[in-house]
Length: 404
Image (cartoon, rainbow, N blue to C red; front, side, top):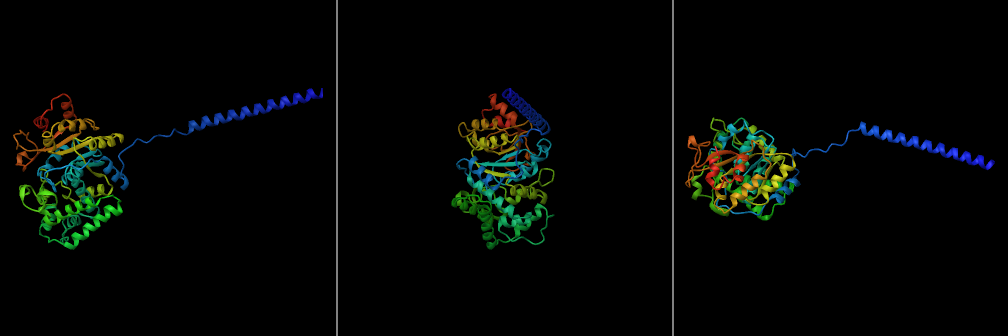
């Protein structure tokens, strides 16, 4: 009897313990459910174009996106397009800030970047020297607080007295046209630029890169504001003469306007220069080596932009297409590359063209004013891609006919 009573007591204890455990477990479940309802689920941030690229990221993009350097007949120290600003006023209504800018060549890109205010810009050129010239511009602009300082370092000339932030582009250019060269400043500027790029930023420029950087610096120093597209024909050139005499100088380009009398160049105003300098300081102007018809550079840019939910707003081509149509199927490969870029209805090609060579060029910006050697044209990127897919683009003239 005593054993039976003991067993009953043990059984009652087990039941009580089990009930308590169930109550605790139930309370835990309720608490967990309550916590789940109270705390919102973690939200995965949508990738976007960053406000700044780390130095390591900037250099990694350059090295990983770029292709081997190619050849072009000229060194292209400056643009040869005098009407390049004249497409800006009408495009400002359609190209909104915050997109992605693509371009080719030297300094004319800066004026488009300042006008269209992209989040990031990629300059893709077949020549590595163009990349290094952009690295030179980057260093000089980062070191220079205003336009006069920038031009002083760029050309190796002591800053003329009396130039303040209100000076017009014409006043700046006129002052530096008259300024004598300063060999000490020239040497010091190169050393400071090299140290900024290599030591401060940590960019792994090779000895050959540094030689090319010095070559670019020397061209600006020896030519001054008279530097033009083909100054000193040939690598390491003789600095003068030849085909380059036909081309507009840096001074002439920086005195140009948008057709309404407003100078929109990157040294057209202090505000413009500050926009450019700010983007350079944040590593958001990324120069690349690449062939428009290649299989890496444009594809890498497209993948980067798409992964960050952005679109290409403007693509400045100069007259690269004219050369692509002379080189087998490179034109077709280029438009295939463009078809894979993330676009939107207002994505715009900006191209230059000339009536020389038997082409019929539509009346574009600059045509009514003579416009120099080249006129500027624009076209919808999406419309051209569709025409290409439909088989309506087979020759260079077809591209020009789709322009306005």
